[in-house]
Amino acid sequence: MSLTDDKINAILILEVLGKPPEHLKETLGKIADAIGNEKDVEIKNKKINDAVEMPNKKGYYTSFAEIEVETKAIIQLIGLMFRYMPAHIEILSPENLKLNNNELGELLNEVVRRLHGYDEIARMMQLEKKIIEKNFKQLLEKYPEAKKELKEVSEKSKPKDKK
Image 1 (spheres, rainbow, N blue to C red):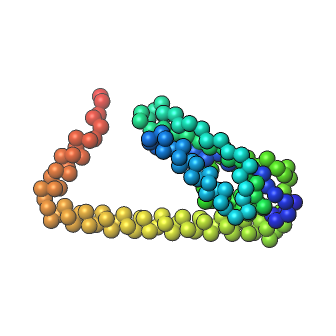
Image 2 (image 1 turned 30 degrees about the vertical axis):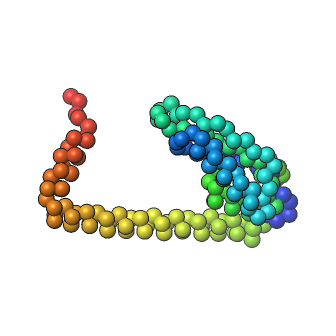
Image 3 (image 1 turned 45 degrees about the horizontal axis):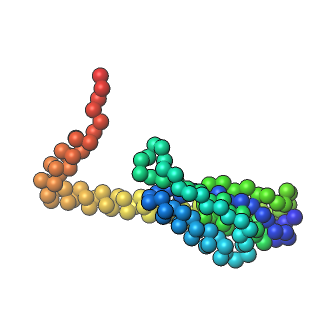
């Protein structure tokens, strides 16, 4: 089997965290609908679970969906992985995949393209952070009373040393 010969059946597990709990189920439903609207992707089955409160984060809820999909080729499944970032993917069929070097190269190039995009975003955020810090320092110099208040708040929020 190659990238483009047979259909791929897989289960995607998608998780969300947030509040209110009814919003999580609605969000997972919208994501499932979007997956079903993808080109060459068919949803075979889906189960969206009710939200449950997180034991270690009161007021926050988590939910997950199990979405069984059938794609025309592995490249569509890889696309779903990048677009929807499932927590887990299980390929149900076929049992074996055969890729030639061109097909493998296509997949690897997609991974690298995405990584370059994320790297660009990270670099822009670092640059923006430096600009914000510089502007913030200038504001603190211009308004010394704000600097004093900030220092007081910072001192109050520091954890106390236990000896």
